Length: 95
Ligand SMILES: [Zn+2]
Image (cartoon, rainbow, N blue to C red; front, side, top):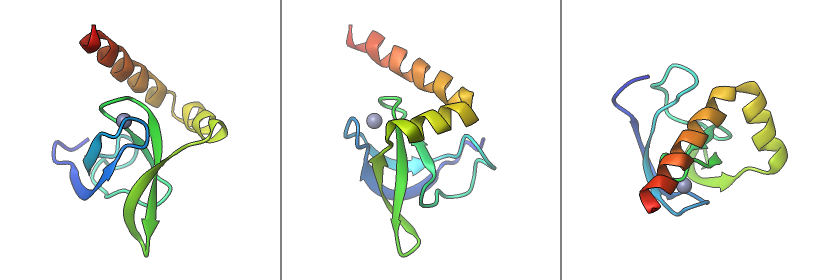
């Protein structure tokens, strides 16, 4: 994974509202910009979203349904582990 994350159009996380401005692919080459349908793991809340696009340019994020989340976690169990770590860190920061 590259230290230099891709700058993307600012878009809010549909779960927590954190404004996403960069992305790094944890799965793949780690440097390509996201495409429509790629999965986002929010570094703030740890929830999964999907990139949406207009005319080939990513423009936003939307929540996944339960079936989509299950498919991601079955194909890439490490995503679930990272999500849990982010959520655990978030809850410990609140207390
Ligand atoms: Zn979030």
